[in-house]
View 1 (cartoon, one colour):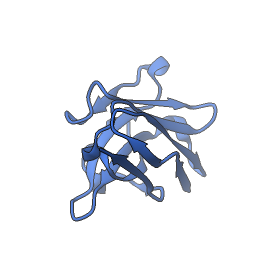
View 2: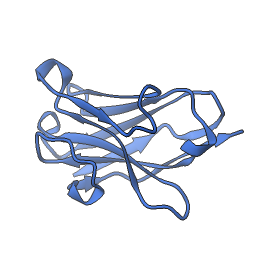
View 3: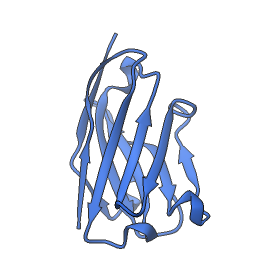
Length: 126
């Protein structure tokens, strides 16, 4: 199983970025996909999760800190999950990780996830 995250970079406050996570080696459409982030000196925290696909009765869930600014989505045909991040602030600066969980229920605890991608760094300048 491989999860390949990409799309991070340097952006000014108020800007946007779109992260992508391409999965291989697993039945993608049956997995919960999540995004987490970890800032220097801080614990890894849940950002957003999506179960299956919206068109198959799936759901999404967001951390309060990103609700209304970030949108998680997935394309099961491409085995890809996305995180659209708008209105970025310096507090969003972190390494962002995608994760996959063999379940129908979104989890917010990082150790509940089975597979992880490498981090992609997001830096928001003030």
